[in-house]
Amino acid sequence: MLSKTYQPKPGDVERKWYVVDASGQTLGRLASRIAAVLRGKHKASFAPHLDVGDFVIVTNAHKVAVTGRKEKLKPYRTHSNYPGGLTTRMLGDVRKRHPDRILREAVRGMLPHTTLGRKQILKLKLYAGSDHPHVAQKPVPLPSV
Image 1 (cartoon, one colour):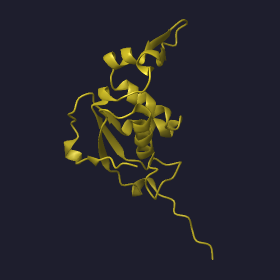
Image 2 (cartoon, rainbow, N blue to C red):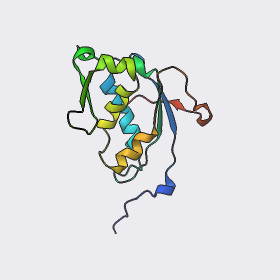
Image 3 (cartoon, one colour):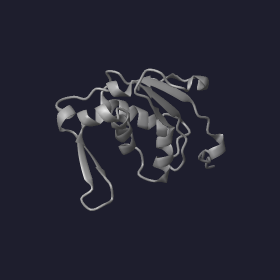
Image 4 (cartoon, helix red, strand yellow):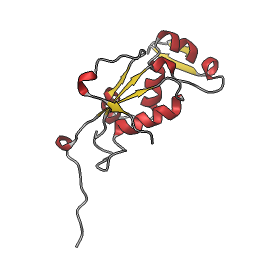
């Protein structure tokens, strides 16, 4: 007798809220933990074709650490979709203008590059300061992996 494989339904998904303090944590290691939670890979009911992940709130996003000389050498490129519209800024400049963009781009690169990934990145809430408006959701600290 063959047993049936469990397939989660979109209505069966229970989402939790996690909060993490990014101050002093390494960019890539933190981004990979967050991406796994956003996808739902920490759950037994994980399905790669469904959004079963949880919400993640990141505070102190401007204090995320990078190693080596990345502050001066790591480029962030944007394009305006006009000819010659490529703009390149280094990580230090991006940190001054948009401190949350560093972590958001790192996490976004680790999610699927499909409509599913675009839905999953919306569950990431980034804040440069230590306060966030999601107290009513009763977030718990992100468990270490």
